[in-house]
Length: 265
Ligand SMILES: Nc1ncnc2c1ncn2[C@@H]1O[C@H](COP(=O)(O)OP(=O)(O)OP(=O)(O)O)[C@@H](O)[C@H]1O
Ligand SMILES: [Mg+2]
Image (cartoon, rainbow, N blue to C red; front, side, top):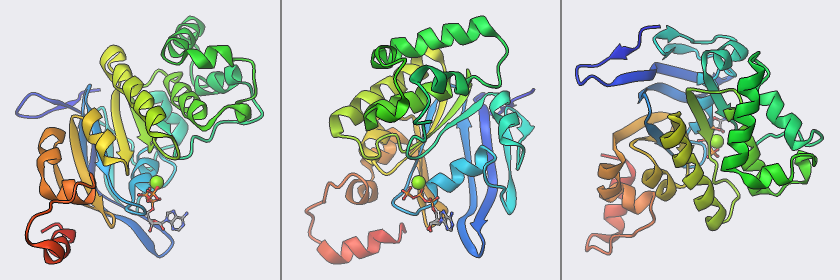
């Protein structure tokens, strides 16, 4: 497959163009366009109900979009079968982990590799995820349902890695975890990106963690992208500081300023 190389020579692995998805009459995302470059961590920030999960489900083929197109490594994958999309090298860590509670940790990991036939590669990747998350090795034969929330998140990420993805979609890995565990998980996500070269698209409500871990970011509100920039620049923007990083600017304009900023103008 030929990847689209832009003028700057960056290789775009994933491209969404004007994607619109709905649940019956409810439009959840409205004309979303974004791109993810090879080897970067990109993030979509948005509050509750903004449409983050819908974007990821539409990319991985769980939801078919009403409009728009999705390209992965130069191939149109819009509304394709999710299993085929995994096989192409794109795996999804769902919101709320969704491990198989009655299967062992080991068998959950094997489920992640179900599209693969290279046994040696699967064994190597199993060893790799145990290096990232040694606790999973200790718990290898236990039911996944007995793991803590943080350990289940580790298992869910590891299961996605077992598909040997080039691009991993991560849906709110911080959900329900303590700040300490969230930090640990994010450190490993960054290591996976740097060491394994996995491209990552992360969606988060936790803007602080996401902006620190990622290279490029999009801000989603009511199903639309309202802002995008490098994370270094986004971290400096007043709107982001106030609404997503919770650092109230104690400036003079007070309430009126808050209202003005909420519209992202
Ligand atoms: N299965 C569904 N049926 C109907 N509406 C849905 C469904 N799932 C999501 N929605 C609606 O679509 C919109 C976007 O939801 P989505 O789950 O993508 O948001 P989100 O950004 O992931 O939110 P959160 O941070 O709470 O996970 C919301 O208005 C939500 O109520
Ligand atoms: Mg969600």
